[in-house]
Image (tube, rainbow, N blue to C red; front, side, top):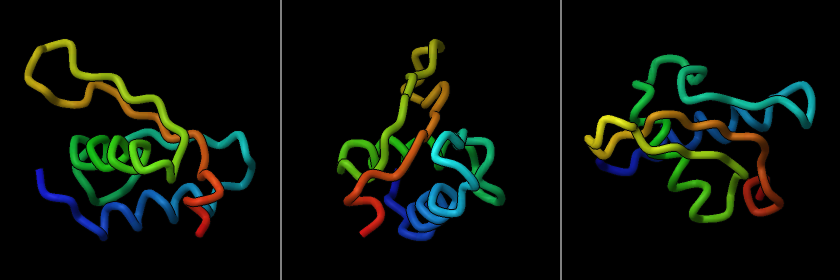
Amino acid sequence: MVRNRDTVRAILLKLERAETARTAVTQEQVEGIPAQEVGYHMMLLKERGLIEASIMKSSTGDGGIGAALARRLTWEGHE
């Protein structure tokens, strides 16, 4: 999958605009972007240290993301 900076931006903005620090974002909650693409980009953001997230691989063995939950931006994510 290709890294898409617009998808990255959508995820970061969604987290930044959260009303409370306890607001979590699932891969289905980023409007207009396929859930698999959002999940993959959440995984990249977590690897880079920009967000705290839980990423679960699909149980079907297809290499997809089964579930992705972004909990918050890190200090670096706010930058």
